Image (cartoon, rainbow, N blue to C red):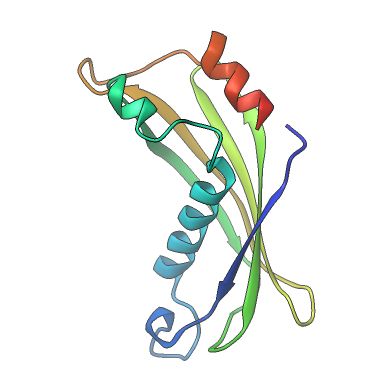
Length: 134
């Protein structure tokens, strides 16, 4: 669980709020992009959906430290913070590249849900091994 991935995001005009900085909703999209990037290549395309499983967010806890403005390049660092019996928590940090200022840090927790039964499934065996390799 030591692997940290970096996702580069350039702040675009459509991500800004009325105050000229990235809106909190867009920051959540940046974190989602980073999660997809973090797990890319570790799971076969459509594997979980073929098994009737889905990743479902159950908790988001972020600290907004500073704003980000048009044209700035942000680095979103992502790592697995914890693997529980039925949930996984990812840690994110968004840093402005030019001055290394922390913009946001926080944790996002998700479960793997059985779509037919509507319940979270235990993260064990092969599934847990895949996350641990990540």
